[in-house]
Length: 341
Image 1 (cartoon, rainbow, N blue to C red):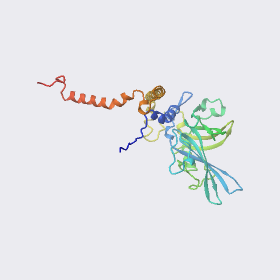
Image 2 (cartoon, rainbow, N blue to C red):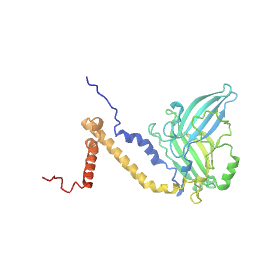
Image 3 (cartoon, one colour):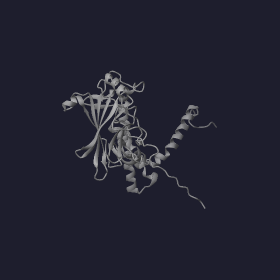
Image 4 (cartoon, rainbow, N blue to C red):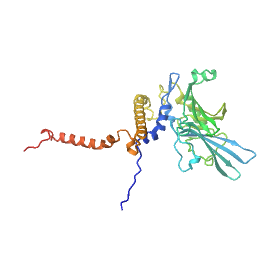
C-alpha cells in the first residue's frame, strides 16, 4: 500500500501579506530624515531601546506601582526573550508601558498590564503611527519659540480595545548644546538606561527620582506625565539631545564612524520608494489575480497564482538558456547545430 506524503507549502501570495506591516512602517516614519517647517533633523543615532520609569506609592498600603515606559524612536520594539507573551507589548509597538505591582511587605512583584502607546498595528484595528511634527522655533506658542528643536506626536490604538482610550505619545526634542552636554555629564542621576522591557523593579533602586535616563549619546530622556487629555491618554516625554539642534549637521554631531554615512542615506530615497512601489504593485497583481482565479475557475494551491505554469517553468527555461550560453562559449555553435557526415 502506498503512503502519501503531504508537504506544507507557503503560497507566494501570502509572502507580501507577511511583509506588509514592516513596509507600512517604513513608508510612514523615517527618523533619519525628519522635516519640520523646511528644517531637517536626523535622530537615527538614538534608534535603540531606552526606558524611563515612574512610581506611584499606594500608602498606607505597603504597595507601589512601577510603570516602565520603553521606546525605540526609529523602529518597532523587539519581543523580549523569556517572558510570557501576555506580559509583553503588542507586535508593532514603538512605545509601550509595562506596569508592575510591588509589595514591599511581602517582597514580591506581580505583572499588572502591558499598554501599547504608539506604533503600527495593522492587525489590531489598522491603527497608524500618524506622526505629527512641529518645529518649536516657528510654533504658534510664544514659549515654544524660545526653544530649539521639534515636537513629535505619535499615535497608538485604543486601550483596552473595547471602550478604551486612544493612546498617544508626545516627545519634545530639545537642543542640547556643548555646554549643557558637559554639565549633564556631571549631574546625571542615572547611568546608561537601555533597559529590557522585563524590568521588574528589583534589580535597581527605582525611586521617584529615577525618571531621567541617559540615552548613551550625551543626552537625557525625561518622563513628564502620563494622563488623560481630551479623549486620549497622552504620554509626555522630554528628550534633550544634540541631534535636536538645527545646526547639528553643520557642526558634525555624529557618533564615531557610524554617523559619517548618515548624510548619504537620503540619496537612497528614490530607490527605496521605487522598490516599495514595485513590491506593492506585484503584491496587488498577485492577490487580485489569485482572487480572480479562485472565483472564476475555483483554482486551488499553485493554480491560484497568475501565470503559475510559466513561473514553474522558469527554472527549466533558465537551465536551457545556460546550456545554450555554455555551448556558444565553447565554440560549438559555428556549424549551426549540424554534425559532419
